[in-house]
Image 1 (cartoon, rainbow, N blue to C red):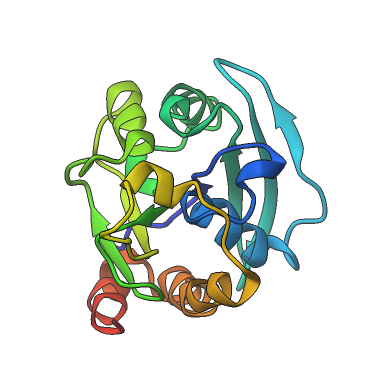
Image 2: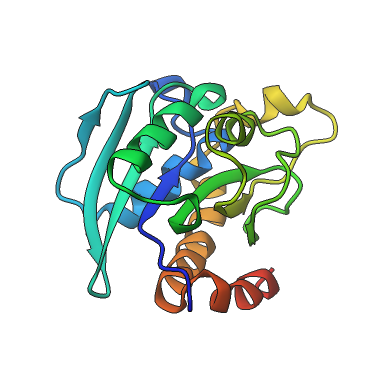
Length: 189
């Protein structure tokens, strides 16, 4: 039976200085997706801080969560939120930036390693690795330190290069389910 996604988590850092950075790809994509489906986000303050909303897409209800504890401490609040609402890791899709993918490309995978991503590492330590990962390509600059690159501000036109294809792939994942959508999402690059 196909896994039904119930929780969609966007990873990013809180604060104005991080809004238009590659590291906030998860927040940005989730914000664009939820513009029409979530009327209000509320605070969640158990084992950390997050904002969450409940919305629907194609008749299915979803929780949308944005941890507000900075990327490297996002795991405990995700685990606690999911536990409270009885959502398993297998029913969770985490959207995050991926410097090893070209700008505008996306990949979907289940489980795997952190690959140097501190947000994923925090989730692994709190909750394990068995969740769906929607990796949004933000590219990298070989002339610049990776940490500095993912925290640098981007102009709107560069952000749109990953938001539009990311939204298309996210909708495909929710329409077909992650297992059935994975090959198509991974070939869209």
